[in-house]
Amino acid sequence: MAPKRSSYIIVGAGVFGVSTAYHLIKKYPNASITLVDRDEYDSGDRVAASWDWNKVVRADYDDIVYCQLGLEAQDVFKSDPLWKPYFHETGIFWTCRSDYATEVIENYRKLGRKADLAAVPVAEARKMYGGLFDEADYSGVKEVLINKTSGWAAAGDCLRAVTKETLRLGVKYVTAEVANLLFDKSGRCSGISTADGQQLYASHTILSTGAYTPKLLEQSAGASGLSELRAGDRIVAGGITTGMTKLDDQTYQKFANMPVGVQGYNAEEGPFIGSLPPTKDKELKWWGQTIFTNMQEVSPGHRISMPPSKADYAQWDIAPRLKKDIDHANQVFYGKKGANWKMEKHRICWDAFTTSADFIISPHAAAKGLYVATCGNFHGWKFFPVLGKYVVEMLEGTLEPKLSQKWAWDRERPDSSFNPDYPRAEMADLIAPVRLSKL
Ligand SMILES: Cc1cc2nc3c(=O)[nH]c(=O)nc-3n(C[C@H](O)[C@H](O)[C@H](O)COP(=O)(O)OP(=O)(O)OC[C@H]3O[C@@H](n4cnc5c(N)ncnc54)[C@H](O)[C@@H]3O)c2cc1C
Image (cartoon, rainbow, N blue to C red; front, side, top):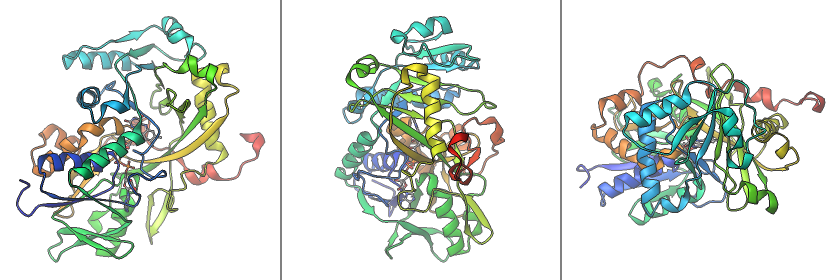
């Protein structure tokens, strides 16, 4: 049984929110649990970062906590019939310009996990996978991490299937834009109000709102007068461009069994770039290297980064400079091989970042009954099967101290300059008109 009189509103049906709902209903089959999202869960067009054609699934982390979490999630992907159909164990091919490969291998060893992974010299790596990456950019590369047990997942399909199962188990789904948080006289969070005038109440309100989280907190701080609700510099919304090409049948044959490609850079050079194997529709995907904020004044004197205010976050409106970012990604993986590929689809995907690249899975310090479970930092999808387990532990106060400190709302955070993936550009500069000759 759920703790007496417990009820749960989870705002946001991305991987953090759905995983939380799934683990809660599995543990407490009779609990009142409501997922609230602005988009239908099975819509063909969602703003969630978690809704995507495909995402990398790996445990290749130099941070042992995420290495262990990644392995735990992969164990589910590889064995549980709910998740298994969406995981593809293609392996990963990761150029390392630091000691990353050695650190990952060492983490596997410390965790007592055996896997087919190795740090391979560049000359040897170039010849692997039929030479698919022989024209890649290897400047500054020390070695290539090959982990045959990593891969990717059909992200949107998986999110839809797990949400559907969660609803079958008894979770309710409300499609509505959450406008504000509600508080009782004692200052305890008592639920949410929606833009269309509904008010929903629960003993626990969990924000799994991804990149929108700082804006929702800002709005709620303005409406309630509880200024401590604001995220401040804890969470920053950042956008990244993805792009896809559709391979012709002949090229597809060569790339069908390719591993995930990652170009790893050091913090001073920029974020890592990725290339995902073709989907069932023969579409090969990249993400770019430019990660940007969209600074806006939400209320007088309060400027924060947030996704564009259009209902679809303007995710399909891609400036020429951001399309160039994908062309660059293509070039550093495939060189001349990809020179004539036509880019068919581009999308800007918004996620929530912290300077340490850690999630926030924590009570919110400013109000009882309010919790935050989000901040995927551009790497949160792969933990989908297990995220909710840790959110439930947080709600129940049983999260181990090491994790509750790491994922706390209030903690010391490092300078963002150490985080290669932290947003460093500003959207307004990227969408400003530019003469084509300058591109
Ligand atoms: C381009 C890109 C590539 C990535 N690649 C990978 C990868 O390969 N592997 C990996 O592991 N991770 C990857 N990630 C990261 C991963 O996608 C995210 O960390 C993760 O999906 C975040 O999940 P979330 O549940 O916090 O947020 P989201 O998935 O963004 O979900 C938030 C939900 O909240 C809803 N919402 C927000 N505000 C409101 C409101 N006011 N009212 C109602 N609903 C609201 C939104 O509609 C949305 O559905 C990538 C991210 C990006 C952007």
